[in-house]
Length: 573
Image (cartoon, rainbow, N blue to C red):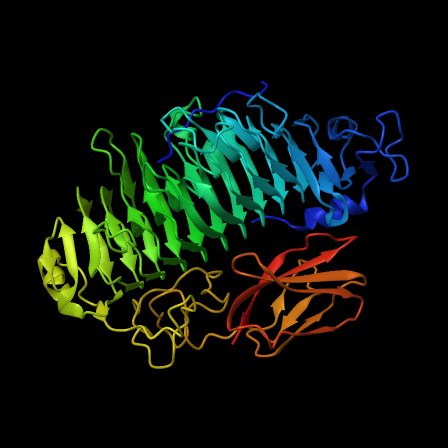
């Protein structure tokens, strides 16, 4: 569900901008102990963030010192393509923009400007109808929103206030209400969005004329309603032909505990968008794990969900199709490839891992569907024109003959379903033999999922499995999001090709070579918990991680001169 009203506030993506901007920068400082009559130097800082922002010109950096700032900020300055303006927490100090004393719905940070970096801030406690944490509007473009926290954005001061269609708050909002010019080239990277009460709105939400975007490495958790949502066809943009989110990638995000008491809430939802790839994400304990839908009149098209893990979601692993018979909403030419589904439909809604509604020319292939003890594989209603559902591995512990399919095909027994529907001619039944059922969905050597995918599947040149390793080994893709036998080479981390991590996968130690002096290396797990933190100047750096369990971890490299280089995945075998 993505019904939302948003108030009008005021009238492949290059990471080198961080280093380019910093090398050309004049640095200014804000501190709670400062004064706006000061010079803005580190020894004579300004007092308010808004005053500091107003002084900035292209290439400048505003460093905000630790503290709680009771401010809302309008960023009405822009950088240039070669000289971004950066507004950031100074050296990872704790900087909180706290809106608890405000009663209006204005976002804590709002802008319709361009060439900006917003880094390391914590936006909290905006509590009013249509409240927002960070909002982009109009034709904002070339903005990097990196490693911020957004929490306690609520539609009411009472987190338990009753919810209806008109109760809305949006922690991170892109509201693209202009045309033909769009909001474009927006990177939303490694932010944490949590503990928000959004009513009928979403948590990371993009609507209208929004294009060329990257939503990567964010952790979105413990919120009401949808985690990440890209929409279209809602009339946000004044010209219908431009009113769709498009040309974007949503990857490496972890979304969990995003639920709604009044309607299923997806971890990741594309509703009315087009030409979007959703890949290598982890979505669990939400309403749906993922959803490709179309709630309004019009279509969602060319959306690909691939190489994701969806497990233990309440209503279904994934939903595909327009569901409202009162609209013309339909999903077209979209695909669900190479994903792993485990134990979804924990609410026993008889949806199983797969819920299908109005669609045409869509494909569901090369997936693993590990069914819960309810034994339901699929619920399908309305029409799925020219659907290809094949080359999947389906399994439930009760056996192939116990599997139920309901809706358009009310059958028991997976082969009976295939016979009745015409689907599944090359699909198989069998235990995928995961490493374990507590979150490690790598395949073991005897898994029937190995080489069980569509032999004609090629994939994109940059497509990888859950370990960032090659997607196809020995010529045929495996079912699910793990490619057995695929091995990572040393991983090049920066655009300057100067940093390597090896071996990857590793067993006991990781070597990081090419790092700068005075670095900080932070390693965290898939839920964002820090499991190791190293500082120093050794190069290469050898990190002993033998105490960690097997699984996926992330390495963040921090440096005073080149902050926020990126976060990269490593695999413990």
